[in-house]
Length: 158
Image (cartoon, rainbow, N blue to C red):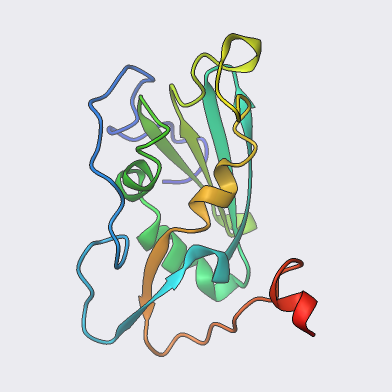
């Protein structure tokens, strides 16, 4: 679904939803298919997050155009809701931005009231993108994905 088509059925409103199980350990689908490998999302994408009231907003941008279809397949409302279940009390809505090779997620009831009304450490959801980037995603085994060099960690070793 592209931007402008409105929310999907799963994210039709920001009404409360029941808690979801913890994220899977192997891949976003929970079962690895033959001919695939599992990588952390950070190898495929950049992300940034913030707040809008009690909702968090996470933008995910493909590092390379060829990763966009993989991101669209792996990052569904359901898989993001499972990965972020420890923070999200409401619906998750996904919007596609194909011209930018990006996706946008709105996580409802994710900030404990948001802003000054929240007692959470991250009351504005600024770290949510980093949490999502830890999500394991299943990709085709033949997809060439170089390991990114991060400012902290590997870059310090160079």
